[in-house]
Image (cartoon, rainbow, N blue to C red; front, side):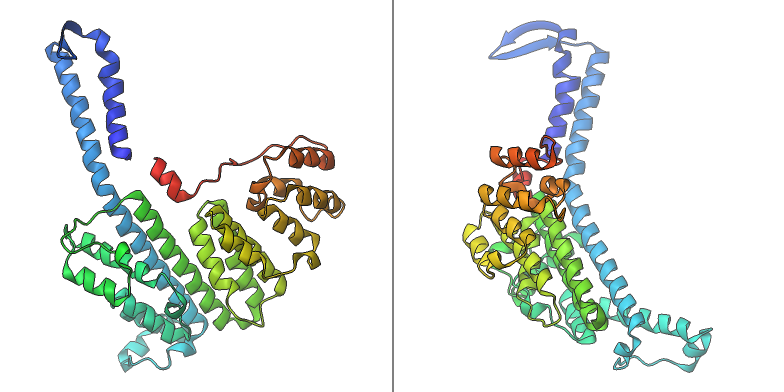
Length: 387
């Protein structure tokens, strides 16, 4: 949508808006005819040519974006795997790769040789298809993401569509279909054979969500297996990533991350963090208009037996402004939720516009309530469609 808008804007500004400078001739069949000189003709021709180039440039831009995000994904996966293997080099002891004496003696130290071996191990895996890469990384680090990843098919489809674009294929072929079907990609997420290979802003955003989700879960799985002393830090970090996704209005990404975390059975996960995840999950669902899912998520706990911090968040997600205002007064002495938290935490979106909430805030904090961010928290998908 951006290319036509910019092209029309350029024509509107540099041609239509300057019609008064041209000599009007007559009206003909609803159109106005003007006489222009050679200089004016050259100007109009330049503007039209620039607008045409803009449209052409924006047609290829989505292709460049998908190539870029997949390339970035590959680089990050590579770096993460290398760092993990350097941290736990015993993970590559089962490697089929053998090294010659000359390769070993070229290294000035064991650390240099280890870097060389890790580099080779990871680069060898990266030569495979993304499906095979993930399987080998799962085997190498001892976990399975694919078994618990409902969007695995859509995830693989991103790479298959990227491959078509990278090789200049303009029409969907049988290889694309075969690989997507092998990954159990839903039909409505695949292009049909013979269909033009197309990308739009909504597809690019969804693709980015798939890749970001996988990267975060990949990092988290490695973290909790290679550094078991920091379970709490790992869970906290991923919950923070989900919370930030909600603030960024990427509610689908947030809900998928939190679904994986909330359902993950672990005795090492602090109960406080799990409750935070449930609140964030319920809130993400509500932003997606999945009210029943939001209510069911909250039913996992009896919030009345939780701290006031959790109680006020649960009431906020439910839109219970009376309950929020009651607890705001009780929490004012403890300062566990600051005045700025009421303005920026996504859970309070559902009550911020209520007059009672604003009056209570003014009473408790002795200042008028105003919001740092827009209260119109539209889904990213809706924003794209409006562009």
